[in-house]
Length: 258
Figure 1: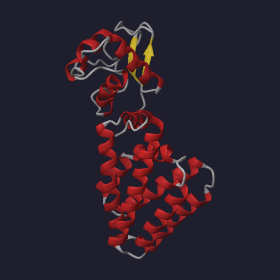
Figure 2: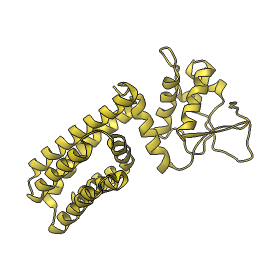
Figure 3: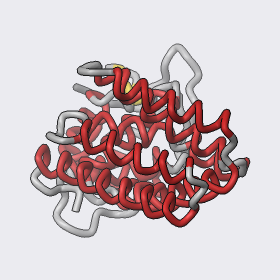
Figure 4: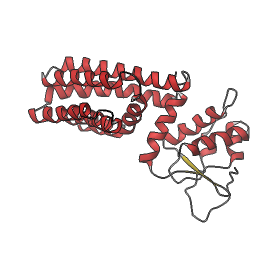
């Protein structure tokens, strides 16, 4: 595989500042360390979709690593669908952020990326606030919609996609019921995190039964218009969901997520 900076028949977005953004890898280099560094800038939006990355040699010099480490990292990101390697042309960030973001989050979980861990942590607090406000503001119609999402979760059976979709809808419905536009917008913006999170834990033993029980407790607290109970129920759900997520990552990558 050859990655060069030769021009293509298309006119790609340039990345003139990437070499400046990258800092040398301090400890002994590895493919995962280089991939993590590149992903930091991809997920932060420093490198836009369609951008052609600098050549292997330039990346290796900027990071202070061997070209083989850069080549391996680029290959890994290509396999994940985050970049596209075009022989004789270069490496390009793929178009379509709606597809890129779940891949970036999943890769971040695999590597124990700090930004992804922070996103998981923030979601825990946002969901608790959402449940508290929903308990204060839910109407009978709102409760009916929440009940329907929970019913769909129960009816999903072995259909993991249907279960995950209904689970996400439950959480986003809760955000709508909270009637705080900023909170709702933030939770919608991290929908990709919810999807990756739930897909990763779907095969953990006890996930379905535990998730149903936890969601039922949240619904009962909201139905009772008890903000404190809703906060506690959501916090417990987030605690258990986070534990299942860590178990999933640890099982697959031997504790790499930290």
